[in-house]
Length: 449
Ligand SMILES: Cc1ncc(COP(=O)(O)O)c(C=O)c1O
Image 1 (cartoon, protein in one colour):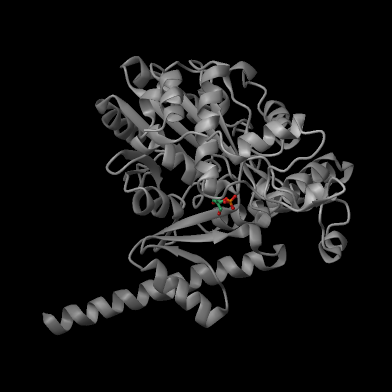
Image 2: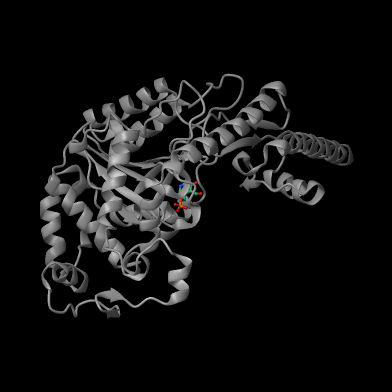
């Protein structure tokens, strides 16, 4: 193993982070190579800086006019120069300030400086590199974002423990199935370590915990640490801020988890993707949080993450980091974001009203939803993908089937005036499909009987 990796490991050994690192996580380090040496030269090379593989003239990177014209508010350096491996410092600091503003219960001493990664997906994948290996279990919600399977199971070889987060049937709880979650988490923690990814607002259900449920989740994690387990909680906060109901907390669970216990390592992955309506920017942040870690430990974790970044994409996109700084400094942004939020909440309300006014569909059971972009139906007695195909072929309506059991509708993408029509068609088509299935079954029974 590389000496630098061993040094970082020795800094982290004895902490929750050191205990949770995967085999590959232990191997990562940030080399004292080209990037580190050229960063050093940036400060001291007054005469000539011949370190980095870029082309400069008169102290500025060469810049094609077409690029300059396309990004007129950015300097040459902000447009085409490589960004630092962990991201542009101004962007990292601003994001940290915003994190503290949006989540006032975060104790600033218990978190690292956010690191820029090329999108939340990349952030999740990098955390999988650091903390998961072949056969290591990770708890996810069921249903969850389908990319978790590809990242954790197919890419990293980890074992997914998919915990049904929502009950079913007449006895089901109105929100999270806390008894089922608690039993599964306690069971998984018996090995002495547990890794969990929490995604609220959730894709695909559109659910975020109520304040009481959030308290219960935090209490559950506290309980398992008291029984001696180390806990890694990755908070995939992609849809952070899109909370539509009063009884949902407005802060990320990360805020409390980061200060909960020395045995908890919380990781917040978030970014402008959805929060700032900049989906294609491919920019996000990873922030580590733990009561048990010092600035030196956070630095070691950041160095390891920089090793992951350097060995995969080298660094994130430069212009979007500066564009994000411009966007967040622009006084129009707050007002526009409020109006986007209001628009999404109105769509949410319409969907909610439709569901409330049309209860008891025989084939579609809406999962609880109160936030984010989506809501999902659990399909009973009909195949979600068949329903999806019929909606597309017969009505020109596109939705997502998640396996055979769930149908996800992104109401965030449907213009307000179309929402009722779309939902009526979904209900009617599901009804038709279910009835056809039943008559088919009856015919089959008659023939075979
Ligand atoms: C739960 C969840 N996490 C992460 C992402 C991806 O974020 P990004 O586009 O920043 O990679 C999505 C996007 O669909 C998502 O639904």
